[in-house]
Length: 145
Image (cartoon, rainbow, N blue to C red):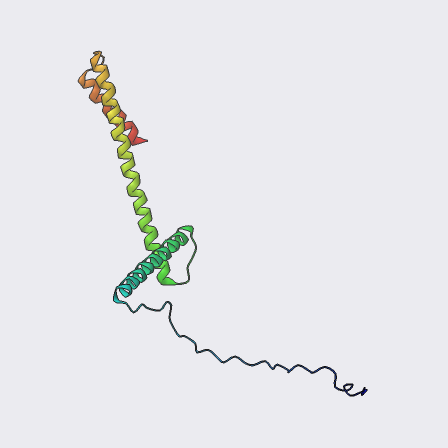
């Protein structure tokens, strides 16, 4: 037996792995989503884009209107102008809605009075002249309040 033949060698060392830099991937320069090549799909894509733009513009106006109504200031003038305009429109609509509601209540009260006067007339309690006076009196009270 030969002694000491393998003494100096030891274990075989593993091959050192150097870190290799990955090859750079070419960047895809696209703005947003890639447009479809099919004509029908392209049309649907364009329609969706226009609808999305309109929705976003509307949301922008609504938030600007709420900010203007709250009394805050916006730095961008174009958005602030749109917000002020929309806030004015909202106020106008609220006033328009208020007026018809009062008129609806008046009509309901008139119908109630006519119904009650009709019942009274069955029993001979009120004359036509009294009915007219009562209706005018109630209407003037309601419109005054």
